[in-house]
Image (cartoon, rainbow, N blue to C red):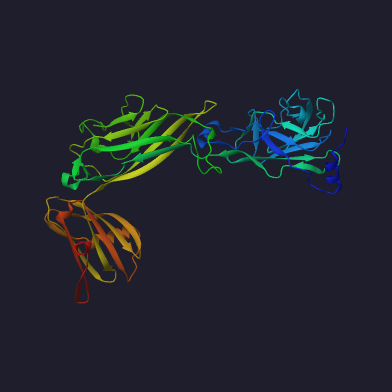
Length: 469
């Protein structure tokens, strides 16, 4: 038997580290480059491991008894649910005589030698040299790795190979670059929400929403779930399909907020939802209910679902200003029948269509008087404020004063108190802008102001004047 092909022997004599490149391939007999398989975050979360594709090492150099074949992965590999992937003897790889693959291949035994402690590399010792059908020495061969190897890293998995001379310890052949065999694709599912925000109509005593020029006493929210398993752009050089995907099962939708305005029976304990319905691709009738956290919740059993949720008419209770949060908790089944959950959150708000007036260039080193007048019938209307100082806006929330019907209030002392409560120190001297939002119709609210320096009084300019220019 020849010790090495002549080219390899010459390369070793010259001190070369490799005579030719090892190619990582796939399939039982190799022949094609190993695929870069994609796995979704949901799949791995359920499985906690992702199976590697079949791996074949195409060796060009002539093998001899005692040569070492080392495969190195960039992350720990497991096998058959044991921590050390390569520490078992039941599924050692084989070397096939490359020229005899199409006929009856002569298999050469490859004995397990050792594995790194972290399970990220394995070295095999050649014990028998593969031969062709005619008995001649076979130059090279195919090392077929055992199946059932898994990654638990959650990151891209690459593999490289090196052949080392069993006598001299010199590297004979190696893969020029690491081949990628697994790539995470990110989230497999997308959750979208539309029409989450609404405007509360102050002209309807806050008991309805403003929709265009008319009022409507219900709020319709749409949710949809998209499976991105077919194509995942941007993951690899071109769009690829997820090889290891999770199948979505039940999906729970939760809408968190203050829903006392939907209570159909104020006299009964708790909130009895009025006019709340769920329709769409939801697999049958669904009755939403409040969970223990006071959120509206329901479950959609369909694998591919979209839903339309109608929050029904308010009757005697004003709709509160608030921020809504919609969450989807997606349950899914994987190929090993485990489950997990993926959540998507979308937020919106109920706001008022009341008056909004901004007073400009208020000096911080002067005595200021800012009057808000309510000429309408809305009594005790809340006033919220936002102050802008050197380009930084601070939401002061509701002020400690209200706009009463046919009355006037100086809001500046309440603004300063709110600034102190917010822990904000206004620049002094400086000019600040103040925006006042009132829970009353725009036509009923007027804002004016002056500042006093010594005996001089100077008018302040508001958006009421500038909007008319």
